[in-house]
Image 1 (tube, rainbow, N blue to C red):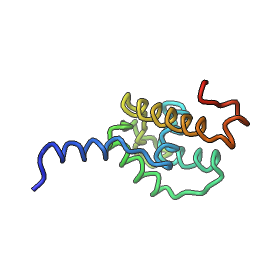
Image 2: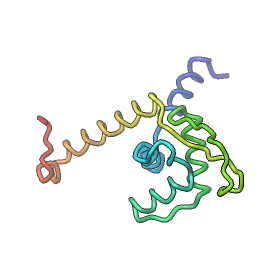
Image 3: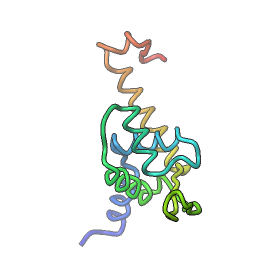
Image 4: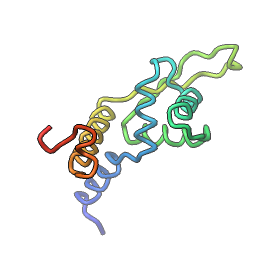
Length: 128
């Protein structure tokens, strides 16, 4: 039987992990205007920015996973007749999500700075 400390540590590890697709999705949520960050619009922005086609189902499952981790939150906006009286689920990045994005960026920059073959080409060095 595992201790409650082990379970807490494992839960924290799961909650703070961020995959590449999740990171890109979160960045797009942050880039889109507040009322524009809904699944369909996120998928179109993802395709436009990356040149990769993705399914709306992949976006929905990623957003659900990010919300479970506490990185994004969603609110339901009023329905409209042009949407068949369906409500939009609008996403925004939480404070925890912003912190995780910042940490991910800082980690990747530190890796780029440590890679001698490319660091100098982009003005990155251990000193900067």
